[in-house]
Amino acid sequence: MPANLPPQYYEAERRFREAKTPEEKIELLEEMMAIMPKHKGTDHLHADLRRKIAKFSEMSGKKTGGTRASMTISKEGAAQLAVIGLPNSGKSQLVAKVTKATPTVADYPFTTTAPTPGMMEFENIQIQLIDTPPLVVSTSVFWFTPLLKRADVLLILVDLSADPLEQMETIISLLTDMKISLDKNKTQSEDERELVYKKTVIVGNKLDLDGGGKNLKDLKDMYGDRFPVMGISAKDGAGIEEMKQTVYQVLDIIRVYTKRPGGRADMTEPVVLPRGSTLEDAALSIHKELLARLKFARVWGSGKHDGVMVSRDHVLQEGDIIELHVPK
Image 1 (cartoon, rainbow, N blue to C red):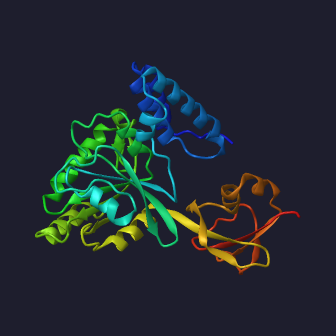
Image 2: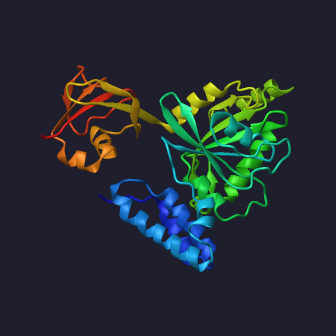
Image 3: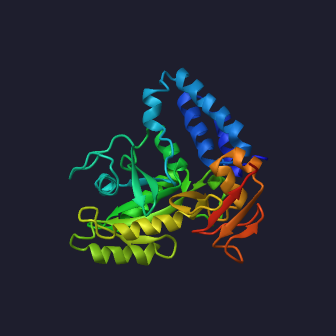
């Protein structure tokens, strides 16, 4: 299977070759991994990039166990979200509210100094949230940008007790400096070809405070036609369920369920796939040997009739139930 690498990957590869320090090379290798599509055709490339990261980590005197673990967080669950915002926006409070993670929560800024992951439950799946250090002009730790570029979605948290539009202008400017774009359809100049597009959800926090409702309206008026925008209170939990539902929609994934021939479907542990995935993709995600041995399959939900036999290129839909048959 061909790798089908996007132009942004080759641009990052060019900058990697020109980089002078191990830290710069590590950051660009992380960026290449974030941009690279994930499928069978990129398995060897992924492994090669990991080896190079380990090599340059040793050259920079950074151990692959301790320091590397603090800046590279493996994706778990259905997807990974990076929670970002300016100081004192309530990121740690939100992550603590919706996950079992225990980031430091306080009424003063800069309480988060390292990324903290936690798992957020949405119905029958888990979505990984990462509490990140605040976005500031002086943010220079070399792992921060690759972490944001690897995430599936950026959840931008805005403090509704202050001017939300001014906060968003600052955040967008800082992300642009990090070569991250929130606008997929923007016509890019030569200088903008390095930008990595990230799906985005804007969440206004502290809706319970004075002025929160008006500031949320201003935020929706300015950005509501480009991004999902909603208000929450991480303190009392208002709006949290709506936020979870919106995050799931933005991820653009589907849940598919499996059943054994003659048995009942397991509706507790779905197979999570990108929207547009086929039966072949589902079989491969379960186990590559299952795909190799697959004889035929039946589907309930998106077939013309429940239990109809479908081909490997059949496109699955949310809530489908599949029955995979292999030779005994």
